[in-house]
Length: 518
Image (cartoon, rainbow, N blue to C red; front, side, top):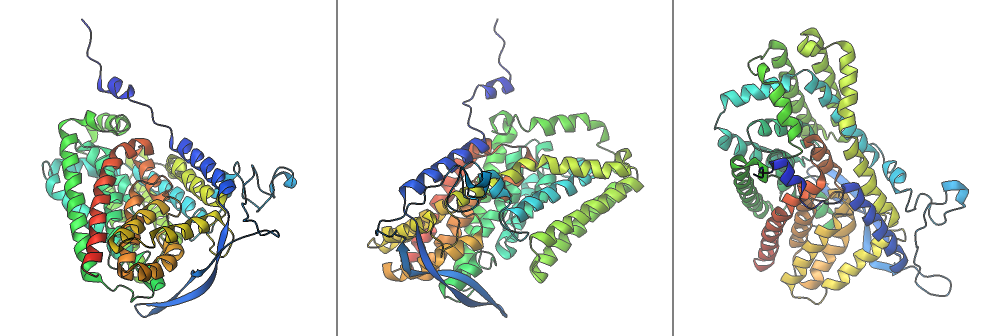
Protein backbone atom coordinates (compact mmCIF):
# COMPACT_ATOMS: atom_id res chain seq x y z
CA UNK A 1 0.00 0.00 0.00
CA UNK A 2 1.55 3.31 -1.09
CA UNK A 3 2.24 5.83 1.66
CA UNK A 4 0.87 9.33 1.36
CA UNK A 5 3.65 11.84 0.59
CA UNK A 6 4.54 14.23 3.39
CA UNK A 7 3.91 17.99 2.97
CA UNK A 8 7.64 18.65 2.50
CA UNK A 9 7.81 16.05 -0.28
CA UNK A 10 4.81 17.53 -2.08
CA UNK A 11 6.21 21.04 -1.90
CA UNK A 12 9.65 19.95 -3.07
CA UNK A 13 8.06 18.59 -6.28
CA UNK A 14 6.81 22.05 -7.25
CA UNK A 15 8.40 23.88 -10.18
CA UNK A 16 11.78 25.28 -9.21
CA UNK A 17 12.02 29.07 -9.63
CA UNK A 18 15.48 30.57 -10.23
CA UNK A 19 17.39 32.07 -7.30
CA UNK A 20 17.09 35.84 -6.79
CA UNK A 21 20.74 36.28 -7.74
CA UNK A 22 20.13 34.44 -11.02
CA UNK A 23 17.13 36.63 -11.84
CA UNK A 24 19.11 39.82 -11.20
CA UNK A 25 22.05 38.52 -13.26
CA UNK A 26 19.77 38.05 -16.26
CA UNK A 27 18.38 41.55 -15.69
CA UNK A 28 21.99 42.78 -15.80
CA UNK A 29 22.47 41.01 -19.15
CA UNK A 30 19.24 42.55 -20.47
CA UNK A 31 20.38 46.00 -19.31
CA UNK A 32 23.71 45.44 -21.08
CA UNK A 33 21.85 44.49 -24.27
CA UNK A 34 19.84 47.73 -24.05
CA UNK A 35 23.04 49.78 -24.07
CA UNK A 36 23.76 48.42 -27.58
CA UNK A 37 20.22 49.07 -28.83
CA UNK A 38 19.14 52.35 -27.21
CA UNK A 39 21.05 55.59 -27.86
CA UNK A 40 22.09 57.60 -24.83
CA UNK A 41 20.37 60.87 -24.01
CA UNK A 42 20.78 63.65 -21.50
CA UNK A 43 19.03 66.65 -19.99
CA UNK A 44 20.19 69.94 -18.63
CA UNK A 45 19.53 70.36 -14.91
CA UNK A 46 18.78 73.17 -12.48
CA UNK A 47 18.16 73.64 -8.76
CA UNK A 48 14.58 73.64 -7.47
CA UNK A 49 13.78 75.16 -4.08
CA UNK A 50 10.65 74.39 -2.09
CA UNK A 51 9.39 74.77 1.46
CA UNK A 52 8.79 71.75 3.69
CA UNK A 53 7.24 73.20 6.80
CA UNK A 54 9.57 75.98 7.90
CA UNK A 55 12.62 74.49 6.16
CA UNK A 56 13.76 75.31 2.64
CA UNK A 57 14.77 72.25 0.65
CA UNK A 58 16.79 72.11 -2.57
CA UNK A 59 16.83 69.41 -5.24
CA UNK A 60 18.74 69.13 -8.50
CA UNK A 61 16.25 68.14 -11.22
CA UNK A 62 16.15 67.81 -14.99
CA UNK A 63 14.61 70.30 -17.42
CA UNK A 64 12.25 68.28 -19.70
CA UNK A 65 12.50 70.57 -22.72
CA UNK A 66 16.30 70.23 -22.85
CA UNK A 67 16.44 66.51 -23.67
CA UNK A 68 18.68 65.53 -26.54
CA UNK A 69 20.08 62.34 -28.01
CA UNK A 70 23.86 62.43 -27.88
CA UNK A 71 25.43 62.24 -31.35
CA UNK A 72 28.94 61.67 -32.63
CA UNK A 73 30.92 63.84 -35.05
CA UNK A 74 28.96 62.50 -38.03
CA UNK A 75 25.62 63.24 -36.35
CA UNK A 76 24.75 59.58 -35.66
CA UNK A 77 23.14 58.70 -32.30
CA UNK A 78 25.65 57.36 -29.79
CA UNK A 79 25.02 53.91 -28.35
CA UNK A 80 27.34 53.42 -25.41
CA UNK A 81 27.47 49.62 -25.46
CA UNK A 82 28.82 48.37 -22.17
CA UNK A 83 31.91 46.13 -22.13
CA UNK A 84 32.75 43.20 -19.88
CA UNK A 85 34.76 45.45 -17.57
CA UNK A 86 35.28 49.16 -17.01
CA UNK A 87 38.39 51.16 -17.88
CA UNK A 88 39.82 50.84 -14.39
CA UNK A 89 39.83 47.05 -14.56
CA UNK A 90 42.93 45.15 -15.72
CA UNK A 91 44.68 48.38 -16.75
CA UNK A 92 41.98 49.16 -19.28
CA UNK A 93 42.98 46.21 -21.47
CA UNK A 94 39.60 44.49 -21.35
CA UNK A 95 37.36 47.50 -21.02
CA UNK A 96 36.55 50.91 -22.41
CA UNK A 97 33.97 53.54 -21.69
CA UNK A 98 33.10 54.84 -18.22
CA UNK A 99 35.17 53.77 -15.21
CA UNK A 100 33.37 51.08 -13.28
CA UNK A 101 30.76 50.53 -16.00
CA UNK A 102 30.96 46.87 -16.98
CA UNK A 103 28.86 43.72 -17.03
CA UNK A 104 31.04 41.42 -14.94
CA UNK A 105 32.07 43.96 -12.31
CA UNK A 106 28.48 44.93 -11.47
CA UNK A 107 28.73 43.25 -8.07
CA UNK A 108 31.77 45.08 -6.72
CA UNK A 109 30.94 48.42 -8.32
CA UNK A 110 27.37 48.16 -7.09
CA UNK A 111 28.39 47.41 -3.51
CA UNK A 112 30.80 50.37 -3.42
CA UNK A 113 28.36 52.83 -4.95
CA UNK A 114 27.15 55.84 -2.97
CA UNK A 115 27.89 56.85 0.61
CA UNK A 116 26.71 56.27 4.17
CA UNK A 117 23.50 58.21 3.52
CA UNK A 118 22.05 55.79 0.98
CA UNK A 119 22.43 53.00 -1.51
CA UNK A 120 24.47 51.03 -1.78
CA UNK A 121 27.17 51.46 0.88
CA UNK A 122 24.86 52.98 3.48
CA UNK A 123 22.09 50.42 3.05
CA UNK A 124 24.54 47.49 3.08
CA UNK A 125 26.15 48.74 6.30
CA UNK A 126 22.72 49.38 7.81
CA UNK A 127 21.50 45.86 7.08
CA UNK A 128 24.64 44.25 8.52
CA UNK A 129 24.62 46.38 11.69
CA UNK A 130 20.90 45.74 12.26
CA UNK A 131 21.45 42.00 11.74
CA UNK A 132 24.35 41.97 14.18
CA UNK A 133 22.51 43.97 16.83
CA UNK A 134 19.50 41.69 16.74
CA UNK A 135 21.77 38.68 16.69
CA UNK A 136 22.84 39.75 20.19
CA UNK A 137 19.25 40.41 21.27
CA UNK A 138 18.08 37.01 20.03
CA UNK A 139 21.04 35.31 21.77
CA UNK A 140 19.72 36.50 25.14
CA UNK A 141 16.57 34.42 24.62
CA UNK A 142 14.43 37.38 25.65
CA UNK A 143 12.52 37.44 22.36
CA UNK A 144 11.71 33.72 22.55
CA UNK A 145 10.62 34.05 26.17
CA UNK A 146 8.52 37.08 25.29
CA UNK A 147 6.91 35.24 22.38
CA UNK A 148 5.88 32.32 24.58
CA UNK A 149 4.54 34.77 27.13
CA UNK A 150 2.52 36.65 24.50
CA UNK A 151 1.12 33.43 23.05
CA UNK A 152 0.02 32.20 26.47
CA UNK A 153 -1.75 35.47 27.21
CA UNK A 154 -3.25 36.22 23.80
CA UNK A 155 -4.58 32.88 22.59
CA UNK A 156 -7.25 33.69 20.01
CA UNK A 157 -6.60 37.43 20.36
CA UNK A 158 -4.57 37.70 17.19
CA UNK A 159 -7.69 38.92 15.37
CA UNK A 160 -7.35 42.04 17.51
CA UNK A 161 -3.54 42.10 17.63
CA UNK A 162 -3.00 41.81 13.87
CA UNK A 163 -5.21 44.81 12.86
CA UNK A 164 -3.57 46.97 15.54
CA UNK A 165 -0.09 46.05 14.30
CA UNK A 166 -1.03 46.58 10.65
CA UNK A 167 -2.49 50.04 11.25
CA UNK A 168 0.48 51.09 13.42
CA UNK A 169 3.04 50.07 10.81
CA UNK A 170 0.99 51.58 8.00
CA UNK A 171 0.79 54.84 9.94
CA UNK A 172 4.57 54.70 10.42
CA UNK A 173 5.06 54.45 6.66
CA UNK A 174 2.60 57.28 6.03
CA UNK A 175 3.82 59.71 8.70
CA UNK A 176 7.60 59.40 8.65
CA UNK A 177 8.37 57.13 5.69
CA UNK A 178 9.09 54.00 7.72
CA UNK A 179 10.91 51.37 5.66
CA UNK A 180 14.33 50.17 6.81
CA UNK A 181 13.08 50.36 10.40
CA UNK A 182 10.75 47.43 9.68
CA UNK A 183 13.69 45.00 9.50
CA UNK A 184 14.29 44.74 13.28
CA UNK A 185 10.56 44.54 13.96
CA UNK A 186 10.31 41.63 11.53
CA UNK A 187 12.95 39.82 13.59
CA UNK A 188 10.47 39.74 16.46
CA UNK A 189 7.09 39.50 14.76
CA UNK A 190 7.91 36.86 12.13
CA UNK A 191 8.87 34.21 14.75
CA UNK A 192 5.89 35.28 16.86
CA UNK A 193 3.28 34.66 14.16
CA UNK A 194 4.93 31.36 13.14
CA UNK A 195 4.71 30.22 16.76
CA UNK A 196 1.02 31.19 16.68
CA UNK A 197 0.46 28.79 13.76
CA UNK A 198 0.76 31.21 10.84
CA UNK A 199 3.72 31.73 8.50
CA UNK A 200 6.54 34.17 7.76
CA UNK A 201 4.48 35.83 5.03
CA UNK A 202 1.91 36.99 7.59
CA UNK A 203 4.73 38.45 9.70
CA UNK A 204 6.21 40.27 6.69
CA UNK A 205 2.82 41.70 5.72
CA UNK A 206 2.17 42.95 9.26
CA UNK A 207 5.50 44.77 9.33
CA UNK A 208 7.22 45.70 6.07
CA UNK A 209 4.12 45.18 3.90
CA UNK A 210 2.06 47.52 6.07
CA UNK A 211 4.79 50.21 6.09
CA UNK A 212 4.85 50.26 2.30
CA UNK A 213 1.07 50.50 2.07
CA UNK A 214 1.36 53.61 4.25
CA UNK A 215 4.43 54.85 2.35
CA UNK A 216 2.60 54.60 -0.98
CA UNK A 217 -0.61 56.33 0.12
CA UNK A 218 0.83 58.92 2.50
CA UNK A 219 -0.28 62.53 2.81
CA UNK A 220 2.96 63.63 4.54
CA UNK A 221 5.79 61.19 3.68
CA UNK A 222 8.97 63.34 3.72
CA UNK A 223 10.82 60.97 1.36
CA UNK A 224 8.30 60.73 -1.46
CA UNK A 225 5.25 63.02 -1.29
CA UNK A 226 7.18 66.04 -0.01
CA UNK A 227 9.93 65.71 -2.63
CA UNK A 228 7.51 64.93 -5.48
CA UNK A 229 5.25 67.87 -4.68
CA UNK A 230 8.18 70.23 -4.13
CA UNK A 231 9.78 69.27 -7.43
CA UNK A 232 6.40 69.53 -9.20
CA UNK A 233 5.88 73.10 -8.02
CA UNK A 234 2.78 72.48 -5.91
CA UNK A 235 2.47 73.17 -2.16
CA UNK A 236 4.19 70.48 -0.09
CA UNK A 237 1.70 68.24 1.78
CA UNK A 238 -1.25 69.76 -0.12
CA UNK A 239 -4.15 67.52 -1.11
CA UNK A 240 -4.04 65.75 2.27
CA UNK A 241 -7.79 64.92 2.57
CA UNK A 242 -7.82 62.88 -0.67
CA UNK A 243 -4.64 61.05 0.37
CA UNK A 244 -5.92 60.36 3.89
CA UNK A 245 -8.98 58.67 2.41
CA UNK A 246 -6.70 56.76 0.04
CA UNK A 247 -4.47 55.65 2.95
CA UNK A 248 -7.45 54.45 4.99
CA UNK A 249 -9.01 52.53 2.10
CA UNK A 250 -5.72 50.87 1.10
CA UNK A 251 -4.90 49.98 4.70
CA UNK A 252 -8.32 48.44 5.34
CA UNK A 253 -8.31 46.44 2.10
CA UNK A 254 -4.69 45.29 2.52
CA UNK A 255 -5.42 44.28 6.12
CA UNK A 256 -8.45 42.33 4.94
CA UNK A 257 -6.31 40.56 2.35
CA UNK A 258 -3.75 39.74 5.04
CA UNK A 259 -6.36 38.41 7.46
CA UNK A 260 -7.99 36.19 4.83
CA UNK A 261 -4.60 34.75 3.93
CA UNK A 262 -3.75 34.26 7.61
CA UNK A 263 -6.98 32.35 8.21
CA UNK A 264 -6.22 30.06 5.26
CA UNK A 265 -2.72 29.30 6.55
CA UNK A 266 -4.00 28.72 10.09
CA UNK A 267 -6.30 26.00 8.74
CA UNK A 268 -3.62 24.36 6.57
CA UNK A 269 0.00 25.59 7.00
CA UNK A 270 1.17 23.42 4.08
CA UNK A 271 -0.56 25.83 1.67
CA UNK A 272 2.03 28.46 2.50
CA UNK A 273 4.88 29.18 0.06
CA UNK A 274 6.95 29.63 3.23
CA UNK A 275 6.11 26.23 4.70
CA UNK A 276 9.56 24.73 4.06
CA UNK A 277 11.56 27.77 5.11
CA UNK A 278 9.43 28.21 8.25
CA UNK A 279 10.64 24.78 9.37
CA UNK A 280 13.68 26.50 10.93
CA UNK A 281 11.49 28.47 13.35
CA UNK A 282 9.09 25.60 13.99
CA UNK A 283 11.92 23.31 15.02
CA UNK A 284 13.49 26.05 17.12
CA UNK A 285 10.26 26.54 19.05
CA UNK A 286 9.81 22.80 19.43
CA UNK A 287 13.31 22.48 20.90
CA UNK A 288 12.64 25.35 23.32
CA UNK A 289 9.22 24.21 24.47
CA UNK A 290 10.51 23.54 27.96
CA UNK A 291 11.37 27.24 28.29
CA UNK A 292 7.86 28.50 27.72
CA UNK A 293 7.24 29.39 31.33
CA UNK A 294 10.70 30.84 32.02
CA UNK A 295 10.46 34.62 31.84
CA UNK A 296 13.17 36.20 33.94
CA UNK A 297 13.88 39.74 35.09
CA UNK A 298 16.74 39.89 32.58
CA UNK A 299 14.36 39.04 29.74
CA UNK A 300 12.06 41.85 30.80
CA UNK A 301 14.98 44.31 30.86
CA UNK A 302 16.07 43.29 27.35
CA UNK A 303 12.53 43.77 26.02
CA UNK A 304 12.36 47.11 27.82
CA UNK A 305 15.62 48.06 26.11
CA UNK A 306 14.05 47.26 22.73
CA UNK A 307 10.95 49.32 23.56
CA UNK A 308 12.97 52.34 24.70
CA UNK A 309 15.24 51.96 21.68
CA UNK A 310 12.28 51.99 19.30
CA UNK A 311 10.88 55.12 20.99
CA UNK A 312 14.31 56.72 20.60
CA UNK A 313 14.38 55.81 16.89
CA UNK A 314 10.87 57.17 16.22
CA UNK A 315 11.67 60.40 18.08
CA UNK A 316 14.94 60.77 16.18
CA UNK A 317 13.34 60.23 12.77
CA UNK A 318 10.32 62.48 13.37
CA UNK A 319 11.88 65.28 15.41
CA UNK A 320 15.58 65.25 14.56
CA UNK A 321 15.57 63.97 10.98
CA UNK A 322 17.66 60.88 11.77
CA UNK A 323 18.44 58.71 8.78
CA UNK A 324 20.49 55.60 7.99
CA UNK A 325 23.72 56.38 9.94
CA UNK A 326 21.90 57.49 13.11
CA UNK A 327 19.31 54.70 13.05
CA UNK A 328 22.00 52.04 12.56
CA UNK A 329 23.93 53.42 15.54
CA UNK A 330 20.79 53.49 17.66
CA UNK A 331 20.14 49.81 17.01
CA UNK A 332 23.80 48.98 17.62
CA UNK A 333 23.53 50.59 21.06
CA UNK A 334 20.29 48.67 21.64
CA UNK A 335 22.04 45.37 20.84
CA UNK A 336 25.08 46.23 22.98
CA UNK A 337 22.94 47.09 26.03
CA UNK A 338 20.93 43.88 25.56
CA UNK A 339 24.17 41.91 25.43
CA UNK A 340 25.43 43.45 28.67
CA UNK A 341 22.11 42.63 30.36
CA UNK A 342 22.39 39.07 29.03
CA UNK A 343 25.86 38.66 30.54
CA UNK A 344 24.91 40.19 33.91
CA UNK A 345 21.79 38.05 34.27
CA UNK A 346 23.44 35.01 32.62
CA UNK A 347 20.60 34.69 30.11
CA UNK A 348 21.12 31.48 28.12
CA UNK A 349 24.44 31.18 30.01
CA UNK A 350 25.63 34.18 28.04
CA UNK A 351 29.27 35.29 28.33
CA UNK A 352 31.09 38.38 27.05
CA UNK A 353 32.47 36.53 24.00
CA UNK A 354 28.92 35.52 23.09
CA UNK A 355 28.13 39.17 22.41
CA UNK A 356 30.75 39.24 19.67
CA UNK A 357 29.87 35.79 18.34
CA UNK A 358 26.15 36.52 18.15
CA UNK A 359 26.78 39.89 16.47
CA UNK A 360 28.84 38.12 13.82
CA UNK A 361 26.21 35.42 13.33
CA UNK A 362 23.37 37.95 13.12
CA UNK A 363 25.22 39.98 10.50
CA UNK A 364 26.06 36.81 8.57
CA UNK A 365 22.37 35.91 8.39
CA UNK A 366 21.71 39.10 6.41
CA UNK A 367 24.75 39.06 4.12
CA UNK A 368 22.61 37.65 1.30
CA UNK A 369 20.19 40.57 1.58
CA UNK A 370 23.08 43.05 1.64
CA UNK A 371 24.54 41.59 -1.56
CA UNK A 372 21.25 42.16 -3.37
CA UNK A 373 21.56 45.88 -2.67
CA UNK A 374 24.87 45.92 -4.55
CA UNK A 375 23.42 43.87 -7.39
CA UNK A 376 20.53 46.31 -7.75
CA UNK A 377 22.97 49.20 -8.00
CA UNK A 378 24.86 47.16 -10.59
CA UNK A 379 21.84 47.36 -12.90
CA UNK A 380 21.91 51.16 -12.71
CA UNK A 381 25.68 51.25 -13.29
CA UNK A 382 25.35 49.11 -16.45
CA UNK A 383 22.67 51.50 -17.74
CA UNK A 384 25.02 54.44 -17.16
CA UNK A 385 23.73 55.77 -13.84
CA UNK A 386 20.85 58.01 -12.77
CA UNK A 387 22.41 61.41 -13.45
CA UNK A 388 20.05 63.43 -15.64
CA UNK A 389 22.83 65.55 -17.14
CA UNK A 390 25.00 62.57 -18.12
CA UNK A 391 24.48 60.55 -21.34
CA UNK A 392 22.57 57.44 -20.23
CA UNK A 393 20.11 54.88 -21.53
CA UNK A 394 17.89 55.60 -18.52
CA UNK A 395 17.38 59.21 -19.63
CA UNK A 396 16.32 58.05 -23.10
CA UNK A 397 13.82 55.59 -21.59
CA UNK A 398 12.47 58.36 -19.36
CA UNK A 399 12.03 60.73 -22.29
CA UNK A 400 10.45 57.99 -24.41
CA UNK A 401 7.80 57.38 -21.76
CA UNK A 402 6.89 61.05 -21.81
CA UNK A 403 6.39 60.93 -25.56
CA UNK A 404 4.19 57.80 -25.35
CA UNK A 405 1.52 59.32 -23.13
CA UNK A 406 1.03 62.50 -25.17
CA UNK A 407 -2.18 62.54 -27.18
CA UNK A 408 -3.99 59.96 -25.04
CA UNK A 409 -7.19 60.71 -23.11
CA UNK A 410 -6.35 62.26 -19.69
CA UNK A 411 -7.45 59.27 -17.61
CA UNK A 412 -5.52 56.83 -19.81
CA UNK A 413 -2.43 59.05 -19.76
CA UNK A 414 -2.53 59.29 -15.96
CA UNK A 415 -2.90 55.52 -15.74
CA UNK A 416 0.11 55.04 -18.01
CA UNK A 417 2.07 57.34 -15.70
CA UNK A 418 1.18 54.99 -12.84
CA UNK A 419 2.26 51.94 -14.86
CA UNK A 420 5.55 53.60 -15.80
CA UNK A 421 6.34 54.64 -12.22
CA UNK A 422 5.64 51.07 -11.07
CA UNK A 423 8.07 49.65 -13.64
CA UNK A 424 10.68 52.38 -13.12
CA UNK A 425 10.78 51.53 -9.41
CA UNK A 426 12.53 48.26 -10.29
CA UNK A 427 15.51 50.35 -11.37
CA UNK A 428 15.37 53.27 -8.91
CA UNK A 429 13.91 52.05 -5.62
CA UNK A 430 14.65 55.22 -3.64
CA UNK A 431 11.48 57.30 -3.30
CA UNK A 432 13.26 60.66 -3.27
CA UNK A 433 15.61 59.53 -6.06
CA UNK A 434 12.76 58.45 -8.29
CA UNK A 435 10.86 61.67 -7.56
CA UNK A 436 13.86 63.80 -8.55
CA UNK A 437 14.24 61.88 -11.80
CA UNK A 438 10.67 61.44 -12.96
CA UNK A 439 8.57 64.26 -11.51
CA UNK A 440 10.32 67.13 -13.36
CA UNK A 441 9.17 65.31 -16.53
CA UNK A 442 5.77 64.08 -15.34
CA UNK A 443 4.61 67.37 -13.79
CA UNK A 444 4.76 69.49 -16.98
CA UNK A 445 3.57 66.46 -18.96
CA UNK A 446 0.47 66.43 -16.76
CA UNK A 447 -0.25 70.01 -17.85
CA UNK A 448 0.00 69.00 -21.52
CA UNK A 449 -2.28 65.96 -21.28
CA UNK A 450 -4.91 67.73 -19.17
CA UNK A 451 -4.52 66.22 -15.69
CA UNK A 452 -3.51 68.00 -12.52
CA UNK A 453 -0.03 67.77 -11.06
CA UNK A 454 -1.57 66.33 -7.89
CA UNK A 455 -2.72 63.33 -9.94
CA UNK A 456 0.80 62.98 -11.36
CA UNK A 457 2.14 62.86 -7.79
CA UNK A 458 -0.47 60.24 -6.83
CA UNK A 459 0.60 58.11 -9.82
CA UNK A 460 4.20 58.48 -8.69
CA UNK A 461 3.68 57.64 -5.02
CA UNK A 462 1.48 54.61 -5.72
CA UNK A 463 3.81 53.28 -8.41
CA UNK A 464 6.86 53.83 -6.24
CA UNK A 465 5.51 52.56 -2.92
CA UNK A 466 3.35 49.55 -3.77
CA UNK A 467 5.98 47.82 -5.91
CA UNK A 468 8.47 48.17 -3.03
CA UNK A 469 6.69 45.11 -1.64
CA UNK A 470 7.84 42.87 -4.49
CA UNK A 471 10.84 44.25 -6.44
CA UNK A 472 13.96 42.16 -5.66
CA UNK A 473 16.09 45.29 -6.06
CA UNK A 474 14.73 46.71 -2.79
CA UNK A 475 17.33 46.39 -0.03
CA UNK A 476 14.65 46.81 2.64
CA UNK A 477 12.51 44.01 1.24
CA UNK A 478 15.48 41.68 0.87
CA UNK A 479 16.55 42.49 4.43
CA UNK A 480 13.12 41.53 5.77
CA UNK A 481 13.08 38.35 3.67
CA UNK A 482 16.54 37.51 5.02
CA UNK A 483 15.22 37.87 8.57
CA UNK A 484 12.28 35.62 7.70
CA UNK A 485 14.60 33.10 5.98
CA UNK A 486 12.30 33.29 2.97
CA UNK A 487 13.60 33.40 -0.60
CA UNK A 488 12.38 36.17 -2.88
CA UNK A 489 11.01 33.61 -5.35
CA UNK A 490 8.80 32.04 -2.66
CA UNK A 491 7.68 35.50 -1.57
CA UNK A 492 6.90 36.43 -5.18
CA UNK A 493 4.62 33.38 -5.54
CA UNK A 494 2.38 34.94 -2.92
CA UNK A 495 2.93 38.58 -3.89
CA UNK A 496 1.93 38.30 -7.54
CA UNK A 497 -1.75 37.98 -6.63
CA UNK A 498 -1.57 40.69 -3.99
CA UNK A 499 0.24 43.02 -6.38
CA UNK A 500 -2.58 42.52 -8.87
CA UNK A 501 -5.09 43.46 -6.18
CA UNK A 502 -3.08 46.55 -5.14
CA UNK A 503 -2.52 47.58 -8.76
CA UNK A 504 -6.27 47.45 -9.45
CA UNK A 505 -7.00 49.55 -6.37
CA UNK A 506 -4.24 51.99 -7.32
CA UNK A 507 -5.64 52.31 -10.85
CA UNK A 508 -9.05 53.17 -9.42
CA UNK A 509 -7.62 55.99 -7.31
CA UNK A 510 -5.53 57.44 -10.15
CA UNK A 511 -8.52 57.48 -12.51
CA UNK A 512 -10.79 58.77 -9.73
CA UNK A 513 -8.34 61.63 -9.18
CA UNK A 514 -8.64 62.58 -12.87
CA UNK A 515 -12.45 62.36 -12.87
CA UNK A 516 -12.92 64.59 -9.81
CA UNK A 517 -10.22 67.05 -10.90
CA UNK A 518 -8.05 66.42 -7.85
